[in-house]
Image (cartoon, rainbow, N blue to C red; front, side):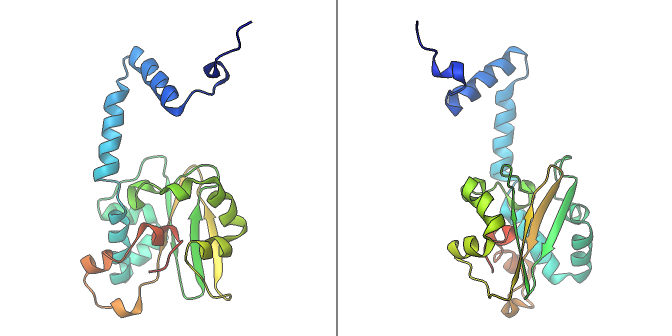
Length: 198
């Protein structure tokens, strides 16, 4: 008897599985190649950490906007022309302070507010990060280069099906009075995830 091929057990490579799905969609006239091309264009041209950097810089310089952002993140980013997918029903903005440090993760997969902070980095998708940051947040942050004082409270936020998070980092005190564009240049994706301070 001939042993079953790996594909019969579902062990085909990711590339083979993607190609099989594309063939099935093509057979139904759904044109997946166009969709993939459009998604790639959005990733490269629209879903960038610079979007979130603009949001953070505006919050640092405009107290009224900051309050709206903390009250209803989704509505506030829309003021800046930033769009979130319909299934991202809520954008919760987590404000870091001198005593509280927020960090985000997605324990089930790798969800983020990608249209605001960009596509998640590889380490964010890693099972070790996703599992350990919840249980050993201080250790994981230290391993990533962020050592927080013992008295700093660390809060870890796990993305859900309809809720996305972004960390609002503390503004460095020596940047008060800087213009928006210069402030935005300071803001990093890691800072908006909460694994770095600015």
